[in-house]
Amino acid sequence: MSDPVLPTAESRRAWLQFVTHTRASRAFPWEFRTYAVEDVQWDEELPDPEARLRVTDLSPGVVELWSTGFAYLGEARVEIDPDREGALYARRSPDEFSITLYYHGPNDLLLAMLHRNQ
Image (tube, rainbow, N blue to C red; front, side):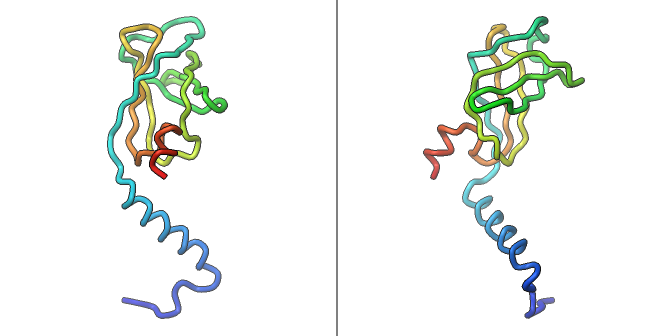
């Protein structure tokens, strides 16, 4: 079922964003990736090894780490893309000063890698 008047003048911008996003998604397929981050500073108490952590952007080059119950735990130094499209979480490594980032999405998490892909 095709409508020759779609997209309308009002929906054209949304349609172009949708089509562009669909093409970009095919160019950068979603995959599961892990990244080691060595520069982590904990606030007070260390989370359990392998504990799942929420990750939020604080500023360029710094992310905040939170428990699953939203208790602030610390910070990590890593250059990630604030406009990433995928899902991100972390786990504390057995080494208390590092974490592993777990990311499911296109190859757009780390800014250094993003610049290499363009």
